[in-house]
Amino acid sequence: MPLYAVFPLLYREDVLSEAWKRVKANKGSSGVDGIEIEDIETMGIEKYLTEPH
Picture: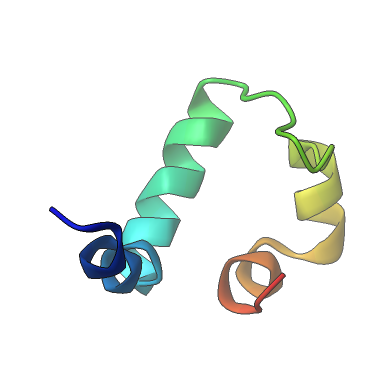
């Protein structure tokens, strides 16, 4: 599957919500951007998942 075909799937609210649940359940670590779970919770999960970065 070409990369451009995957982008619409990544931005679906249900996909992002499920991904967040899995990261949170696994006590995920920060990525290359250095943002940690606690940072996202502080700024607001809904806001973080719906606004572009």
